[in-house]
Amino acid sequence: MALDEIAAACGTPCYVYSARGILNRYQAYDEAFGRTPHLVCYAVKANSNLSLLRLLAHAGAGFDIVSGGELFRVLQAGGTPSKIVFSGVGKTSDEIEYALNCRIHSFNCESEPELALINELALKRGLRARVALRVNPDVDAATHPYISTGLRDNKFGVDIADAERVYEYAQSLPGLAPESVSCHIGSQLLDAAPLMEAVDRMVALAGRLQKRGLPIRNLDLGGGLGIAYQPGQSTPLIAAFIEEMKQRVSELGLTIMIEPGRSLVGECGVLLSRVIHRKKNSVKEFVVLDAAMNDLLRPALYQAHHEILPVTQSSRPLMTADIVGPVCETGDFLAKGRTVPELEAGELVAVMSAGAYGFVMSSNYNSRPRVAEVLVEDNRWRIVRQREKFEDLVRGE
Ligand code: LLP
Image (cartoon, rainbow, N blue to C red; front, side):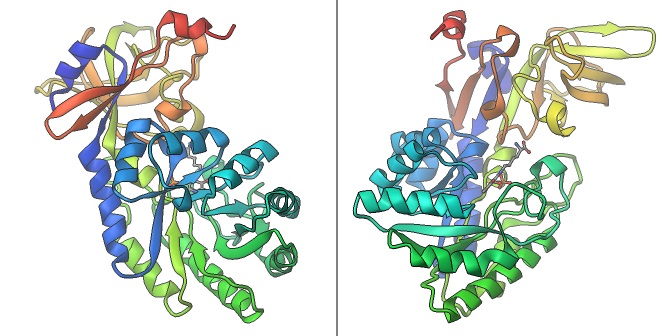
């Protein structure tokens, strides 16, 4: 699909996603599990556009949600409640009630007070809520500190050393059915080894819990598989990754659940932007784009690398520049000291691998309307979220 056609029709900046790319990755997960009982729960936080959720729901995916808002989106998109898991360190009573009323699959719980709260709300409805404890296996995911979650000093989960005691507590509460064990050690993992280490610890724990008589049926191993943001970066392949996971889990008769986000959608989206102008000072050159940190926060927040390519390929000299947006912050950059083909004012660039944690983390900072989102399906494209108007900026004020 020609990106310049899309830009001409719907303006820039805009996110453009590939439906085929997303479905291929979902199928790679699903097929790698084969006959092993499994549930692939897409982590909605990575990209929660209704049209993407609808695609995945039709393909049979489950969903991992972290808020009432995400639950609402999944239901709007036709997601099946019995395939939804609810994660997150601070679910409110309202959110828990909403999820109980919808009869979701289970809650991934992160503390004893949370277990007590879910128990109380379930009993009021005469229900037994299926729960997992999110266990912190204390392995170092070796990723950016802001997206590493499996170490003891993170806010997430229950220490593995404490897990058996907390499971006994959950088992003692009549409104809970502790049927699953869950973990998630971090995101953008480029090496599968720490995850496999966590899998081994989780399998051992599930075995110990079963011996104590707990009805453990599911093992939820979270998300985290990384993608190649830089050319030549190597990442574990979905099929090999799942194969290794399967081998480690066999025997206990558990259903394997996973919660991939980035690896399903990250590489299937670009942020399309236009160069406003170039500007030089005594020490450097800047390329000023119409997209900024409010549209794609990852470079500013995590020093993340996204390739930036001219949409029209031609042989031209290279330049080194900071590629920045119009927002009034020094932290507003999409790339620093980047060598790219010489870019001209007015031309289009594609910020690559922006399908995950792109639009969803965008804001109206500097009163910039949030951008449009476009979905490419087969040889057609359509707008799946309208660009915001100025009126949208002041709605509710
Ligand atoms: N499950 C749980 C409980 C999670 O916390 C996350 C991500 C996932 C699954 C999905 O992980 P993935 O497969 O996407 O790695 N905004 C950051 C990423 C934050 C990830 C938070 N949790 C970024 O832009 O890199």
